[in-house]
Length: 203
Image (cartoon, rainbow, N blue to C red; front, side):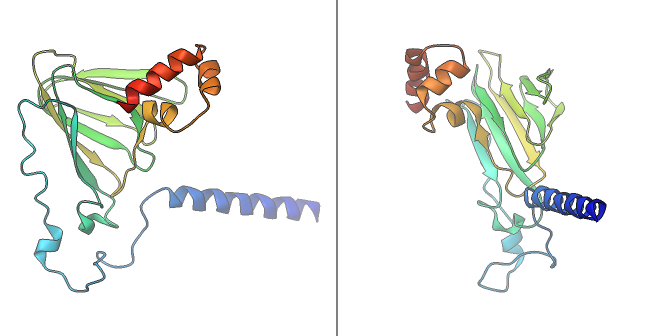
């Protein structure tokens, strides 16, 4: 009886674990596509022109132009989305994660330094040139940096989710109200230093 109970509990735990993992991904749909509440659609519903004016040879700041479920509702249930990344000279996309999708990046213009850190705290970084691709595994902290101080960079990222999600490491840690003492102890520094970082991120 005890063995049966243990097996039952283990089976229940596995089912719960699988269901939680499944919920972290895009849902499987039982139709060809998801239509808005208005009902019928035509080809225009499956067309998005929001990326057509992405090319800016001289961006002033790091800029992301997205084509996700929010901007392009036809992607709902299709497990795919895009983003155009524009880096000014010396521009950086700070360390961040996408909890619901891997990211496949291709450099269209310029040279870009990229990297991610795995769960063993090993850094995998690479310098990408035009036409090079790099994959950032799902949920891992990663970054992109234009080391060139004279030339901008343009890249495109594809995601295996219509809503990949974004957690910026600096903003998540320093601008969400975590107690300054906790942060000072965690980063082995003092409270004034933490407050200086917080102020810089808010400006």
